[in-house]
Length: 171
Image (cartoon, rainbow, N blue to C red):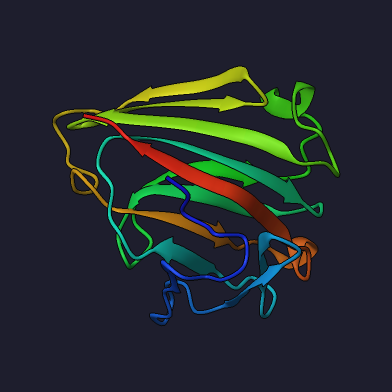
């Protein structure tokens, strides 16, 4: 199921609680969701209106570097959730070998269980697997998909782009 129609932000909402998501501008441009900080060191989140529990998420992402961004999983309106970080520049990072700088990259994430196991792939390469600690509830069994942007002065005015955002709900 498509979470983004390529034309509007229908089904998505910025979360503008002070200190939690009130410092970013989100728009649709050329078939992509584009996020940018409104001032240095600001944080912003655009999240689905619908919540999801177990799912496979696929999307394409491109960034202007440096960037400090991520995809939140099972997120609350306050921005609490599991994060797949998209921090830059990619040089020196484990995923630098598969990240296509200046191009579209495919991110795949599978979230399953209570507490979840989260697996990530970038451009088809396995990146990480997290098995959460069952002794400590971090967030609920379901939540929103959040796109975020934040970071220091070096990332200010650089944009993050997301397109072809789609989800498959799992049992």
